Length: 258
Image 1 (cartoon, one colour):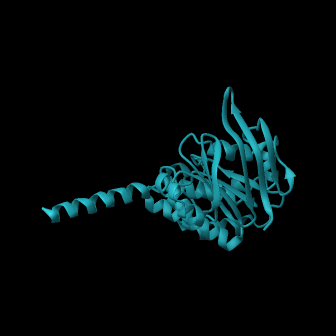
Image 2 (tube, rainbow, N blue to C red):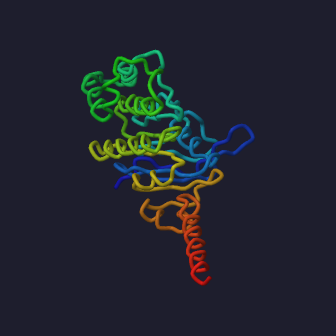
Image 3 (cartoon, helix red, strand yellow):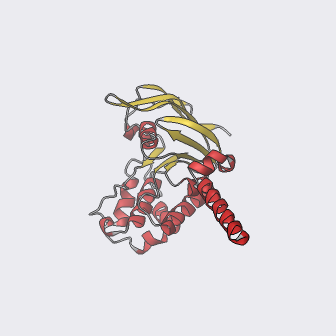
C-alpha cells in the first residue's frame, strides 16, 4: 500500500523545551494508525505539527508525496488533512446542524453538503436526534461525535483524531471507536489517532506507534504490539494482573498446606 503520510526525523520545540525529537512514522492509505503514550509523551504535539498548527524545527512531513512542513493549518486542511483537536472545540451557540454545515466551509465544491450531513447522521444517530439543539448543551460524548462529524464534512483524505476518548465513559469510548472503525471500513478513509487508552486503540487500529518523552520507542502492527510482553505490562496493565493472579495462587496453596 502507498504511504499517504510520511514523517521523517521530526523535531518540534516549545521555546527552550524540545517536545518531540527525531520522530519518524508512515501512515499507509486506508489504514487506522494509533500513536500511544502517556501524558507528556508528545502525541498531541506530533498531530499539531502534522496539521500545521505548530511549525517544526526540523524534519520533513510529506503528505500525498508533497512536502507540507511549514504550511499554515488552513492550507493543510484544504489539502485533505483535517484535525479533530483535543477538547472538541465545537461552536457552543450554534446548532448541531449548523456546526456540521460549518465543517464544509472550506470545500471548493459545495455540492453534496446536505447529503454528507445525512451521512454523518447515519453514522451518529444521536446527532440526528439533536440536530436543532445548541452544541454547548450536548454531553461530552455527543460533542466528540459532533467534532468528528464536523471534520468529516470537509471530506478529508486523512483524519487526525486527538484523544477521542478523553473524558468519556467506557461505554461511550467503545461507541466512538466502533463508529470510527465503521467509517474506515465503509469509506476507506485513512485515520491517524493519538490515544492514552492503549487497549481500545490497539483493538481498533491496524498499526501502532508508542511514544515516550518525545520519541518513538516501538512501532509495529497492533496485533504484534499487543503480543509484546513490555506493551502488555506497561500499556495494557496485564503484567500487574498476572502478578496478582500468581500471588492469589500461592496464597491458596499455603491455605491448603495448613
